[in-house]
Image (cartoon, rainbow, N blue to C red; front, side, top):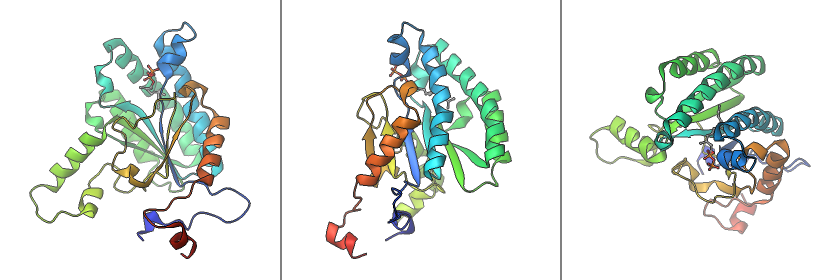
Length: 246
Ligand code: FPP
C-alpha cells in the first residue's frame, strides 16, 4: 500500500484519529448575507473571518494540511463588482494572515493558476510562500483560480508528448504534487457536489456535507465533522477483514 494511503497515523488511544489533510468547499456566503438582507460581499467578509477560526480548530485537532477552495476558475463569471471585491478581500486577508503564519510557523501555499490574479495579489502570495517555505508541520493551502480539469490540462501539457504515462507521472505534475490527498472533503451550505475541486485527489476521500452556510461554520461545526470522520472506516478497496489484519 503506498505511503500516502497508509492508515498508520490513526491512533488507537482515547483521542479520535485526526485526518492529516482536510479540504473544504466554503459555500453559502451569498445566501448567508441574503438571509440577513445584507449585500453578498458582507457574507464573503464574514466567511474570511471563519478561515482563521477553522484553521485554528484544524491545527488544534492535529490536521497538517488545510486546503480551502477560495476562488474557482469558474468564479470569474460572477458580476465584475463581486470578483473585484473578492480580490480585494483576498489581498487584505493575505496581509492579515502573514503575521500569523510566521508566528505560528505555518507554511502557506496555493494551488490553481495564479498567473491570472491581479498583480498585487500575486506579489503578496509569492512573498508569503517564500517567507513560510521552511515550515513543515502545518500547511494552509488556498485554491485560487483553481479547477480540477484545468489542473489536469496543465499537468498533461507539462508532461508533453510521451508514451506509457503512469499515474505517478500525472500525480507529480498536478498542482498538489507534494501535498497528500485529502482524507476528508467538507462542503458547507447543504450542496452535495464537488464542483471541479480536487477530483483526482478525492479518489479515496471521505465526503462530509454540513447543512450550515460557511459564515456559520466555526470550530464547533469543524469538530463535529472530525468526530464523524473518526467513525468512518476507510477501506481503500479492501475488505474489513483485510484491514483488521494489516
Ligand atoms: C462561496 O459562497 C464562496 C466563495 C465563492 C468565495 C470564498 C471566499 C471566502 C470564504 C472569503 C475570502 C477567502 C479568503 C481565503 C480570503 P457563494 O458566494 O458561492 O455563496 P452562495 O452559493 O450562497 O451564493
